[in-house]
Structure formats: C-alpha cells, structure tokens
Length: 188
Image 1: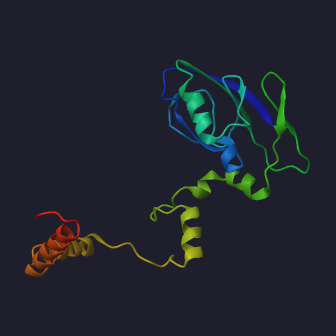
Image 2 (image 1 turned 45 degrees about the vertical axis):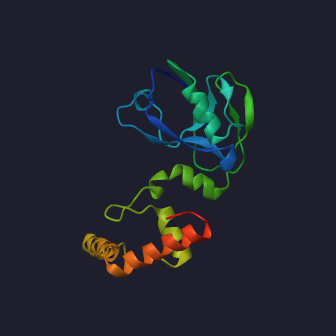
Image 3 (image 1 turned 60 degrees about the vertical axis):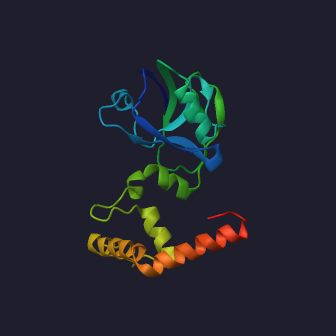
C-alpha cells in the first residue's frame, strides 16, 4: 500500500468529496474529485484512503468529524493518503507519512470492491440510477415501476386545482373549520 502526503494551499474548496468514516465502519476515502480542482492537481485519486488530516490520525474519526477537521484547516490542508492495492492474502499495517502505525486496515472483499470500483455506484448512462438504487429497488420489488411522466403530473396538478375550487371542497373546508372552532371553543 503506497502512502503519501499531499498539501493543498487554500482557501477552500479543496476539490474532493469524502466517504466513509468510523460511523460507517469503512475507512475514510476520496469518493469524488472536481476536475481541475486543487486535489486533482495535487495527484489525489478517487479511492485514496485518508490516513491523516493535518497530521492527526483519521482512522478514529466519524464522517462529520473529518469534514469539520477539513473545514477548520483554513488556508492549508495537509492530508496523509494511501492508495489501495488489490486485496492481498495477508494484512498490511498502514503507515502514516511519519511512519507511525495507525491500525490494520483489511476491509472485507465487498468493501474493498466498493472502494476500488466506485464507478459501479455512479448512475448508468440513460438511467440516472446508481447500482445501489437498483439493488434497493430489486429488494423492495419496485424495479419495474416507472416514474410519472410530465404530462401525467400536469394532469394530476390540474385535477387537484379543480378540486380545490369545487363547491364540495369549499363545503367540507368550511365544515371542518367550524367544527374545529367549536371543539376548541374559538369563535369563527
């Protein structure tokens, strides 16, 4: 596992998005880069694991703690990163740039696949649905449901407006207001 240090000169935005954290039981990693952004120019890659933020071990940080730590950096952000290699048979100790062991990072095969193959979770061209969304739809039995088209939505809105203007709705609304006022002992 190659570990390295990147220093980004501020101010924010830094040009990357985080995923994971102690609260997700997944190491913090880079999930997205802004093309041409500060992080991309410094050689940061999607899938890089965040080992430290401004010299502090990031292995014990929740997602929001890591975000807050990055926000607090101000004009200079120092990140200790490592680039994951394909899953190996035996675990390796992750080293910070100053060679202090952090902890063993050996994700199970499914987490490793997620971190290495992030495009799997991006929307497929033409569908707008990520793989995780399709899996959820399959589990809930809704994968073949269609989104309502614009014309159907327009007709529904028109029908709703017409119902709001109908005498039946007006009578029901007035009855409800009068009944509520009576129950609450309020003059209408």
